[in-house]
Structures are given as C-alpha cells and as structure tokens.
Image (tube, rainbow, N blue to C red; front, side, top):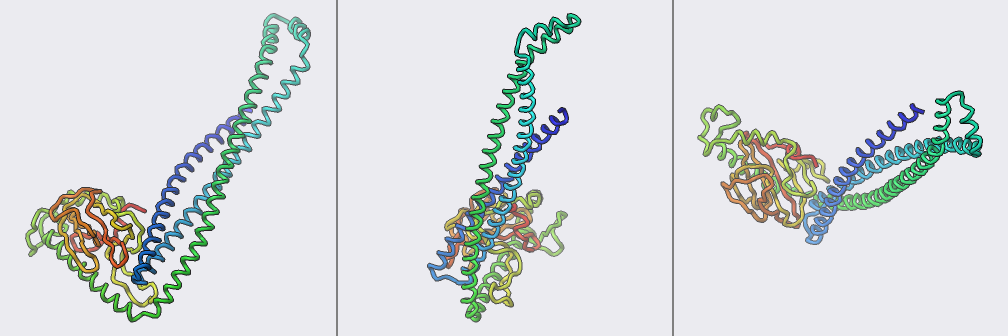
Amino acid sequence: MRLRKVISLLCVLLCLGVSTAYGQDVKEKESRKARLEREIALLDKQIKANAAKNADALSRLSLVRSKISTRQALVSESEKEIEALEDSIAIRQQQIDLLQARLDTMVAYSSRLVKSAYKNRDSRIWYMYILASDNLAQGFRRMSFFKNLSSQMSDQAAKIKASKAEIEKEKADLEVLAASARQLKSQRLKDLQQLKTEEKEAQTLSASLSRQKAKYQKDLAAKRRQADALEREIRAAINKAIGGSGKAKAGPRKGASKPKAPVDYKLADQFVANRGILPWPVEGALTGRFGKQYHSVFKNLQLPANNGVNVAVAPDASVKAVFNGTVAQITVLPGYHQCILVQHGNYFTLYAKMKRVDVKAGDKVTTGQRLGTVDTIAGETVFHFEIWDDRTVPQDPEIWLRPR
C-alpha cells in the first residue's frame, strides 16, 4: 500500500509538470500561429492590391509563393500542436486509469469495512468482546477499535466521493482536449486545401511569366541598376560617417581621412551584444531574404543580390529603430524612395522604401522609436532593411534580429 501511494504521488507530480510545460508550449504555439495567420491575411491583401492595379506579375508570384511558404509553416505549427495535444490526451488518460485503480482499491476496502460492521452490528456482541479482554489495556484497545470503525467508514466514503469527482473532472478535461484536437485537425485540413489552391495559382502565374522572358530580363536589368545605386550610396555614406577609421580602436588607418566625429565603439559593442535579439523594424511577412537569389521562373537568371531583407507590410505601416543610434543620412533613390541610414558606432542600419520620414540627419534615435512609414510602390507595400559594418560589408539581418 505504501509503495502504491508513493507511485501514485509521483505520477500525479509528473502529470502536473507535463501539464504546466504543455500549457507554456501551447501559448508559444498559439502565438506563432497567430503571427502566421496575420502574415497570410496581409499577403492576401497585397496580392489582391497587386492584381487590381495590374502590377508586375513577378511581384505577385513572389507574394503568392511567400504566402505558400507561410501557409506551410502554419500547417506545420498545427501538426506540432496536434501532436502535443495527443500526447497530453494520452497522459490524461493514464491519470484517469490511475485514479480509477485507486478508486477500485478504496471501494474494495470500504466493502470489507461494511461487511465487518454488519457482522458486528449487535451492540451486545461488542460489549461481550470488550468484557472478554484479558486485561484493562486490551479492553481499551478493543473499545477504541469499535469507536474508530464508524469513523473509518465515514472517511472512506468521503474519499470515494472525492475520487469519483476527480475522475469526472479529469474526463471533462480530457473531452476538452479531444475537442481541441478535432478542431485543429479540421483547420489543418482546410489549410491544406487552401495550400493546393495557392500552389495552383503559383503554377498559373509561372506559366504566364515563362512567355515573357525578354520583358523580365529588361526589368531585372533596371532593378539591378537601382540596387547598385543603393549600394554605392550606402558605401559612400558609411565612408563619410566613419572617415576610414575602420574597426581598429587604436586610431584611423594610415592614409585615411579624419572622421567627422569620434566613433562610439561602446555603442557598437552594445549593438553587437544584442546580435540575434534586436527587434524587427516592422511587423509583416518576410518576402525576400539576404544574399544571391535566382528568378523564380527562369532559373538561369540571377536576381540582384539582396543586401538585406524585404518585408511585406500593411499600407502606411510604422517603421521603428532597431537600436539606439544617430541618423547619419536621409536620401532618395529610384526604386527605394526615401531611405534612412542610422549609425550605431561602427555599424549601420538602413530603412528603405519610406513614404514619410519623422527624423532628420543628426537626430539621436532610441530603440523602438518611430522613424516614419512605409511607402506603397507599384502596388506593393514592401519594406527593405539592411545592416552594414564599417568595412562596408552587408550583414544578414535575420542573424541580428530576434527569431520570428
């Protein structure tokens, strides 16, 4: 009996621990799912706006494929949540089985008590049994036994009642979990069906684009010139801000021009210390990643290298600074509209495709401060963000920003 109690206690503690961990895990999964659902809704709006304005079919294809990728991530999250729910259901069922076994034991023990009380229901037998004691101590013990018998029966009845109530509660909780699992499976099925529709749309767009190779070669050449112009502007702005001081803290390199202002290396160290946890400048769906990319239809056509990331956002979405710094320059460039370059010691962040700018060159900005709003260009509201160091080397923003 003692071993059974110990095992029961351990099982209860284990279930409580698993339940707590499951609850935390569910909250995280629900948060990720909510973000993915917001991104899908946002991409839907962008695609409809793009189609309504007869905008670039390649851009629409890019948005559709981003939506497909996001939908796949949403389905994956649903599958993980379903798996976690099924594990929780199995654990809950084990707990119910354990409680039922304990209840059966208590009922059997209670039955023996009732039978014993029934056999000795005549009070005269009790008195004779007490009077037949060998000594006074034995008599007191026998008297105590009869007094405690009724109390034990009452306690056992109360325990049985409590155990039955606990089992009913566990069964109710189990049904809630089972209903959640059924609902999630139904939603996952809808998402998979929607995924097929979106993949078919992507195939249709790809077929349409495949007949316009010459046109897109020309468009890509224009975009490449715009990207090159932006890169040259950034490099010139960084060289102007740093004055060729580089990363060496001992002083400027030989032959370099004198910096306009001392580089705040302490701020740069703080910036580096926040690598991987910097806040995203906007909330939206990631549509373009860092590095070299190839055309989604013409696989042998290389797109202009992306020195940052592209994020589809709602019209007039707010843009926020990712870290403390100073506005080094504000410029206007074809294809990128207004661009803000913020200096963080010997690191720089670029906020491009801005419609409204709420800061000016020389302003001090703080983490999370609003810098302006995103512009809608050719039917697209896509924000562009880059991170550079003083060697004019672009960094992958996803390594610096907190995980999505």
